[in-house]
Image 1 (cartoon, rainbow, N blue to C red):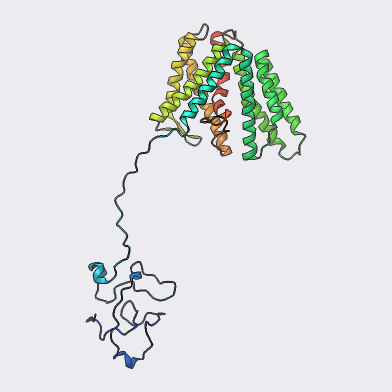
Image 2: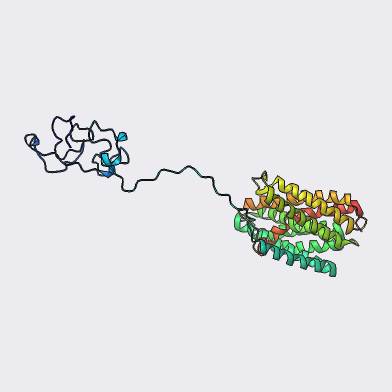
Length: 376
């Protein structure tokens, strides 16, 4: 263990990293000795300090670590661990070359089986009520409106502390749908005005704090859910009303289905990533294509006096309005910090999650139907 660079063997207890004497603050490894005894002391055998492999730092006791070569003529990089006496107990393996991440299978994000089952069930109820007794279908619309208002006001209160009065909204919303069916657009507007007035008065029974935001949210809810839904009831009043409503429902569903299918398979370019990251431009093209084809077929074979080219325009308008309606509710849900408005429909979310594209599409279809084939 002697080294030619030393004049004498290193004294016992020596812990200096460079051979220049004891390291500052180091504690001798053995009993104290004086300079006279130093020449008679045998060299202390070298015991490798495994902790030296790891950096040039002091431990928490303040003693200096051996962080370099013990002898000055040793070069750590030129000697293996066995020669340097610093064999690590658990040597870390060299990192492998980065491997590409495995491709993950695309997922729809929902229980597709439950979604299809619920969708089929709702379709049966709607079709049966639509073609058996018109008044029953109006009742189905009214119930959907009330449930949608309940979901919306509940989420507003939970997430934002906004207490839009549900009682006048529910009563006025149901009355609005019935008025639209019985009295047309005039009845719908009168019912809307009375519902807004009822919201203002009902909220006066509570403390004034938050009055403005509560009634504003109430009037918004009255317009967004029941008023837009009245156009479905108004479509039903025509002689071929059930087929007009069926066309409206089919085009909206086909538009959503086309957007989902094409976007899921080919979607790469985001449509509105800040609002709805899952929607793509390819999905929008799928919605337009599917809806235009379905519109041409429906107007040609279901609606009296309808033609295929009118169906093309109708399908284009439905795809645009359904997409905007979906984005609009996505904006509301992002503001509220929620994924779904409710959980009543397995695989779908809440009633409002199914009405999001239907509600803004209803007045568009009603208006185009009136322009193309009249109101009766």
